Amino acid sequence: MLSSLLLLLTAQSNPVTVITNVSVITPGSNQISQSQDVGFDNTKILFVKPTGTEPIIPSATKVDGTGKFIIPGLWDMHVHLADERSLGLFTANGVTGIRVMFGQPLQLTWRKNIQTGKSPGPEMVLAGPIVDGPKPVWNGSIGVSTPDEARAAVRKIKKDGYDFVKVYSLLSRECYLAIADECKKQKIDFAGHVPHSVGILEAQAAGQRTSEHVMEVALECSDHPEAYRAKIESAAQEGLTKASEVSRELAPTIVGSYSLEKQTKLIDELAKGSMWQCPTLVVLRNIANLDNSSINNENQNKYVSPFMKVQWDPKNDFRFKNRKAEDWDRSRANYSSIVEFTRKMIAAKVKILAGTDCLNPYVYAGYSLHEELELLVKAGMTPTDALASATINPAKFFGRDKSIGTISEGSVASFVLLDANPLEDIRNTHRISAVAQNGKYYDRKALDKILKDREY
Ligand SMILES: [Zn+2]
Image: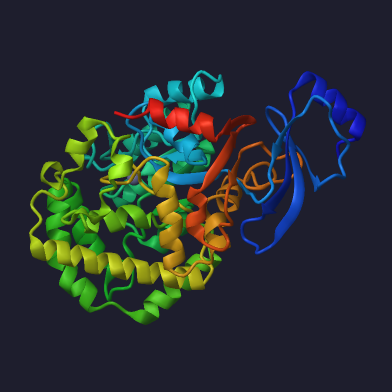
């Protein structure tokens, strides 16, 4: 508890702002504390008290929160970054934290620029460059062929100052297990795709912290997962094209032998286990629907560079350019089955994180996190649990639930002030009145300025 005297002293050295008579939302519960005063300085929330019970600080700036709702700052747990200025789009959309899934040296500088107040942007947790098989899917990845190379990649990523290791689809089993072991030794997390060569539960047992995009489920629930994995694994050593070719050949057998019993067991084990799921429904929906324009948001395209718009055209994307009508139909059916699997995970209380995979086609920095919340609700989450997946769940995932993901005394002053109640309709998270990012307060006018400056 901060005594009144201490509070007055704090107010002299740090400007204090008080949002008065606001409704405070605790994600994960349906509880709303009405008529609260929330005071914060340039780093922390100083108090959350029923309106009128905290002594008046003469120097404090007051914001009338009547009719408004306050939620903790949102986290997008799966993003990619193209440039520094797009970072402001997260702040302008109430996304006060991001987990960057493909780190590059420049991003360490961008993070510093945010921390020193040079430019607006979210808190950044950074993966190193992707670690993949010998012929990586993406340029800029670290390709590894042997366990020694895999271990060396882990040590380099740690030495270069990144926060965790991102594993990817084409890793061989022995390289993957070497990464898991080296990460334990170096005390650094690893997360990302469950490689084709490894089972989901095996990845969980190896200590992988998150699994992205609900991958490898069909294989896990098939009749002979080890045999299929071995085939895809050897193809993966020759690169993505070969791996996809073999996957496509095996698909009818894998899907044909899908066992609901195995699925139930898998979901049970995930619910009991330590690995978090980041389904990224918004990107999966988009890439299943690139052949129609419904996913194209004209209001948001103005924040996308001309270069990126060209990249977003499926004709220019190596993953989609050869797709035919039946491939799009198949990918839509695949998306529906992912949504149904997610629905079951939600019902079984599997640990879920909200993430978008922005920078992929029509997945917009900042904006799309709100779409992800909406899609999670459509898949069966309550609005308050959807909010939790972007606030208190990331906080628990990082082991920081005392300082972020909550509106309480002593927590980091990163929050979003909304004009309408998100528990009534999750789309109300779009209705942003103000954002605080680590104690820096942006009212609507300031947020609009950030947006204006980022138009192309
Ligand atoms: Zn990604």
